[in-house]
Length: 113
Image (tube, one colour):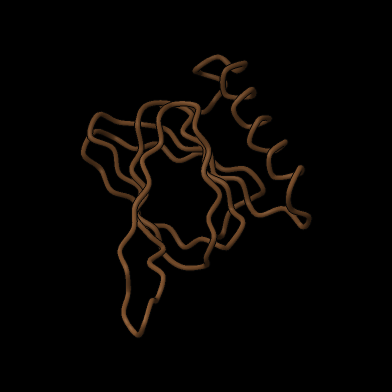
């Protein structure tokens, strides 16, 4: 994903957004409900489709490189955190920090349009 360390993606109702992601990247549902489709792993010579639903405040760490699709029926905002050089506690701390920053910033300061 060609972004900075921390990036926000707004999804309008019914919108789908395709993103190139790297293993270890974290996605935080800052507002609304988000469905993440992919990246699809290979199993026994075929691709297996998988998806994850995030409620507001939930975080998900991607296990594989590839393409994902973000979608939301009612609109949402997702905070994308690039994979940190170190894993474990650093990853959890970054997810917590992203969620706290979202709640602390007023709507106009968060870059919403």
